[in-house]
Image (cartoon, rainbow, N blue to C red; front, side, top):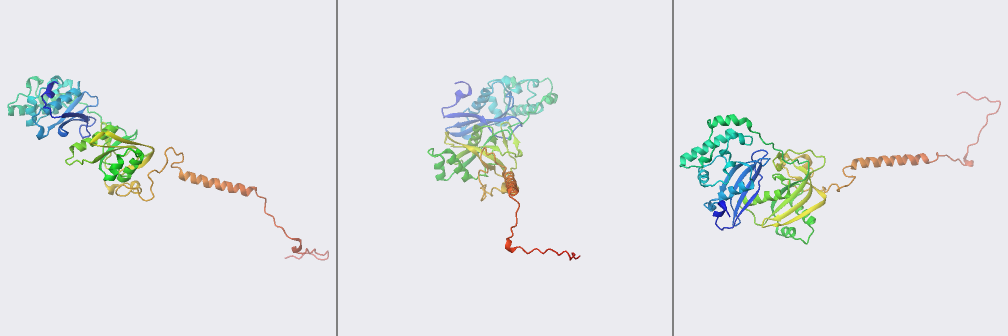
Length: 411
């Protein structure tokens, strides 16, 4: 054991390095080092990673009051350096407490700190004027508090900081926020639930079929009540991580919560709804109720995350991401679901069988049937003999032949 980690006491400390679905720099991936001590959230370090992995920006470093003075902040920062071994690092501007901590911190690789290198090496990743502003703030706090702040390692500019910042401002290249394409495949979103005791027992009873349990849970949630506020991720792991973060930072987390993940794809022929693309997920903004095909579900308890239950649907279930506001729900959604996301009477959770060649062609099929029926009637009618009229001999009227003397009268 070496570095800051060697100074930790034996308190059952665990670090979790994970993606974190938070807002930040467009195109950059938000990540978090989460420190847990004795199963309790003790601190976290949030940072953003450039799409090419060669630059990161530290956004927040926090240790909870009950866990300070244990060297936890230094351990988390060391973990960032160890996880991204070649990236430029921008530590940003500091507060009073952060300036004091930085003065004590032994930076593992000072050569990757952009404050210690000339801007021509890193200016494509970071806005030079902003970096110069950070340096000015940090220098001021160091002077006010009588701190060295590792000043000897910092890069010495030949010009004033504002001049250097203006000179290199044009070198910055903003990363594109591409994110996953909702129309290109399946996405995963999650929901935390506190289930009735009976349903909770059913959902974790492996003697029952997984698909039947999943459909029972969906009946409880509502087919049109998939979460509109969820981040929809490219992987199941990321969806569960998102819920785990919510659980950890929830001020009053429910011990009996069940974490449920939905695997969905947009319904065929549907236009891609408005969405906010991030590096590894999307969120649907102002959802009017978005029709999706539910192809699978997974669920687990936060107390036993390794015991995950999964159901795959051979035939997708027709579902919907709930509208953010009922007053703005689409007519298509309200025709199928009520205000709490349940199917209206007469609506089926599966409107067409998977792979059914007749799905969506009901009107065409009815028209073709009527046409065939009419053609058949016409053929039968054409094959019958012409109708004849028989007159019995005894009923015939006698024929009167005019005599030769008579001439027919003109009428």
